[in-house]
Length: 65
Image 1 (cartoon, rainbow, N blue to C red):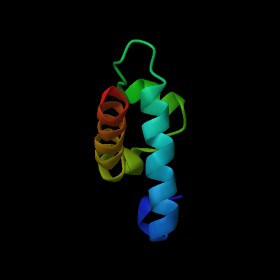
Image 2: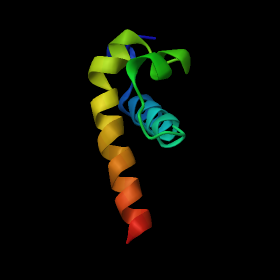
Image 3: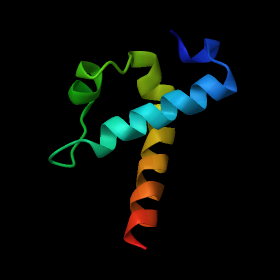
């Protein structure tokens, strides 16, 4: 589903899901191929992934604190 068609709540859930995928990366390097293999679409790459990166980073900072 195109990310422009998601409600704000659905968008927040999807961002959280993508952030979880990024945290699961074994080597810490989530490239586009890895994300696509896990079901992230091209539209999500440009719209939701940047927000998911911020969320994943914030979560790791909270865990470290």
